[in-house]
Length: 142
Image (cartoon, rainbow, N blue to C red; front, side, top):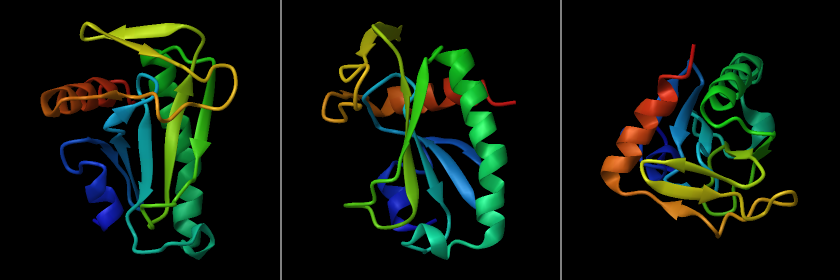
């Protein structure tokens, strides 16, 4: 796994692994169920990924949207390819909703709704919460 994947807590935050990608729980949760979809390669440019990695995205995005729909009941979903600090190809997957969601006695508000997500307004999870929430989200994948 590349350094970007490890930065986001792999393997503790692993939700699902595919041939070319991993789905990780985002350790800082701007909204409940926020994920990182990261390419397993060393590429730093999206267009440099092999065709099979691009093709696999169709399957993965369908699985993500079904899982987060069941878990969070989002109204919109944002796939943000920022790659400003962490260089390897990855997306921040942010489920968007009006109001708040609650999990494990904690409140998760979509502070940016209905505009841009406010990534600076995120709930920082403890290590046990990261593992637990990763498992809960993973259980929603088909």
